Amino acid sequence: MRFPFAFVEVNKCYRDITSVKNLRSYSVRRSGTIGMLMNTSRPLVVGAAVGLLISATAMALIWFGVAGVLWVGNTDLMYVFWPSSRILTVGWSSTIPGISNTVLSVAINCFLYMALAYALHSVWRIVRRSVNHSGRGL
Image (cartoon, rainbow, N blue to C red; front, top):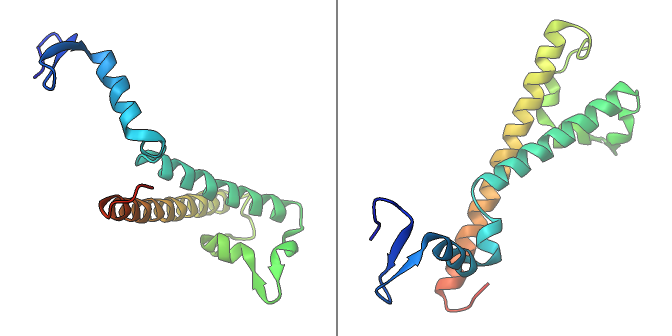
């Protein structure tokens, strides 16, 4: 039960008044480290950062003319890790349409890695719940 002035809260277990600060610290302690680390926004930020890092690395290799190091056998790893790089044009860094296409390609790659990170996060939550419900902790 909350009071309108929000400085105190009635603890239903012990029927006493406890400060909101104490209740917040209790809920953080109770949720554990995994609960604090795995919220919804963190995987999205990490996915966007990974997508941006991969795009920036590939563009730096193209800029310096050594993008050939990304070839393994007959596979170009740039297209594996940055599929939207196929839309890059010859003037990717010097013309307005080329720069626009590059920005679009990087944004698509960031969204792709954000979706991948969120999917992995969802699978992790499902696995963690099923393990916790089966009686063992993770």
